[in-house]
Length: 354
Image (tube, rainbow, N blue to C red; front, top):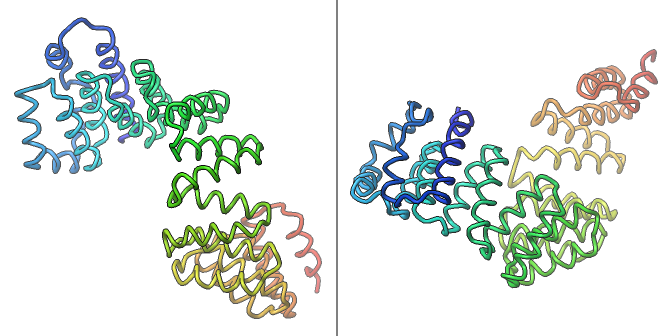
């Protein structure tokens, strides 16, 4: 429903932004002329009724009735609507804030982020492009716009924006991070690694940068991966992402016992972490501990009953334990989720007539 209303709202917001940049009217005249009559306003839902009954929001509305040119109040009310999960109203108020102050980066970023959250990338980019045209030296708008082009895999445009942002804000860790992400996607791995190292150097507690740096080192089987996973855990001791990264690093470097230790830590934090159960099962299978391996594939299936590869591996365990009936059932079930998988078909055919 919100997505549909934001389509209507996007047209209205575009109209407001056009007025803001082209009209000769005063801000007061613009705010009066652009009244709340777009189709999104017909929406009636409990969230809207609840927030509009809020004394805090009603106070902001009264202030706007006295002074419709106060961009900060429009923005504050928009944020209240957004927090109450009424994004179409938030979009209107953010646009009204921009109508009265077209040079405030926070207003462009908030409106663009709202569209991004509902996967309306076209309007998110349009808002930021408008903001950049009016505030060409605003690094936050420039970097955010670069991110959106990165998401669209327009790496050329993204890199141009990141490079310009870096010149304006050379100490910005987020810029280095997104430059690194873009270069990584383009398989420019050495450059990407250096920039990710720079992002972490600029902000040692930048979670996303530290975890990504750890993953980059892990891909190279470089022990510095462990150092950075431990840094992540210093930031967030319950990070299943970091624990899983450590476990995978140990598993991929033939340190099975250490991997098992980390996987056990993961399921202690998150009992529904399916891949941890699966990978423990896989390690036990390779250690020829088929009964224990089967127990862990059971756990994986209990959490995720559609995990085809877990049925296959459980079938492999059953076959090793000479429980061919169970193996047959598991292979058939695996094929339900992974149809035409040659390895599973071969395993099933091998025991079909036994």
